[in-house]
Amino acid sequence: MPFNQKPQKFNAKINTVTIGSGDKTVTLGGNSTFPFYTFDAPTANAPKVGIEISDLGLDAFAPGVKAFYEGASTMAEIAQKAASVEGADFLALNLEGGDPNGTNKSVDELIAIVKEVAGAVDCPLVVEGCKNVEKDAELLPKVAEALQGRNVLVMSEKEENYKAIGAAAGLAYDQVVGAESAVDINLAKQLNVVTTQLGVNAQKIVMNVGSAAAGYGYEYVVSTMDRIKGAALGQSDNMLQMPIITPVSAETWGVKEATASEADMPEWGPEDERGIDMEIMTAAADLAAGSDAVILRHPKSVETISKMIAALV
Image (cartoon, rainbow, N blue to C red; front, side, top):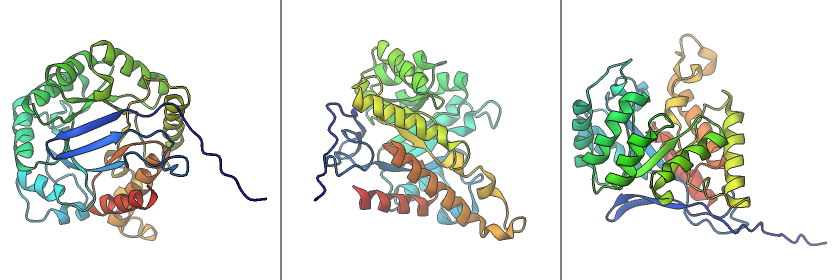
């Protein structure tokens, strides 16, 4: 007997969220199928790929990443070089230098870097905080203010600081809010609920539901994204219909497979190639599990994942 395919149809879809301004924008979400299920319905908006840079410059990056930026010395030059990478849809600036337990740069120092980067490129921007909830509550509203009119995605709002960041980014300065939770569907939903209760438009929220490098408890990430997409589409849960963005680079470039030297682990092969492999494998898994955008660091990873997306949509 012939095979009669029966497409799985949902009455719901993921929210459409636009980042960027003018003719330089990217659109996340908008799909009514599970990831890459083009046999059920056409893909409304393909997943997007961002490239990450840091306010700390290139010092903490792997040799292969540093080599790509050779000749770039200022943050503006690094940003321009990153924005030129083949397959990069947006630029993600990580303000990790603001961490009080690390470099502890002042808010004024970081805002100066934000303005320098924003002035050097016209592509869509994502700005990540330093992961310290108190510092981010002070820093990210200033970021939202400094980038008025650019429609940037401001990450990351958490349960502990959602009032300060959500009110500033999502209301006062009309930016897109990145709601970050820790690999748990209930935490993700609750943060979306309280953020919308502030008055932030649900169409201006993107979720970061957490991540891990492939092989490092990654099954929790997959199951969480699966449940979120299932509830968003199958149950029409409008508090889980926000697109998902996943910062992959911070997880993958810190594990031993990416950091162990070739001298210590010769059987593992070149260090830089291992880092790229970890980043690509994790990003591919995130996209297959339900992420609408991933943030990567190595230009080769960006190019490879971009080509994978193009081949599947």
